[in-house]
Each structure stands twice: as structure tokens, then as C-alpha cells.
Length: 132
Image (cartoon, rainbow, N blue to C red):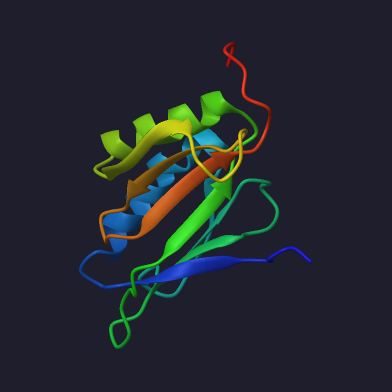
């Protein structure tokens, strides 16, 4: 079974900036901000299909973010590259530039720490080619 949705809890002081960061960082993967709930936008859902949300940012002052790792699937290496450029340009911290990883010969990934410190990975498992 596939995971239906996931996300992170945000500190109120960082919520708006994290929403903006994910809008920019996930744009190369086709993600858009689809839903916003609460009088102050406390819950924001993102989608790459335009019909269902699978990534959420939820503002929670009592239990803010616990640092985690999340990996998004890319359809190609150029998408991995574009994510890395967009995420760093939006204020993320490089945590591993695009490249082959040791996990298997076609594991092409990039890692960026979001502004709250979460390790966000975008990975492509397609056979690696020189022509991206």
C-alpha cells in the first residue's frame, strides 16, 4: 500500500516562511498549494495531482516540528536537479548535491534542509543516463 499523506508540524513563528519555502522547493516536482484550513492558514496541503493532498504543513504551537527526513519521487534526474536549485534558492541548506548514491546504481538524489532543519530528499530511481 502507498502512503496517503504525510507532513510536518510547524512552529507558528516559522509557519508562513515554511509554506513559502515548500511552494518554491516543490514546484519543480509539480506540487502546488491546494488547500488551506483554519482562520490563519494553520493547515496547508500540497498536491502534485491537483485533486488530492499528500503533503501537509500544520501549525502546532504546543508540539512544533520534530526534525525528520522525507523523500519525494522525481520522474527524472533533471527534476532532482531543478528541486535542488529551487530549494537552495528559496533559503534551504544544501545537504547533498544531486548525484548517484550508494543505495543502488540508479539512485539519483539531492538533499536539502528546509528552514526548520528537516532533511528533504528528491530521488529518481530510473536508470542513470548522461542525457538528462
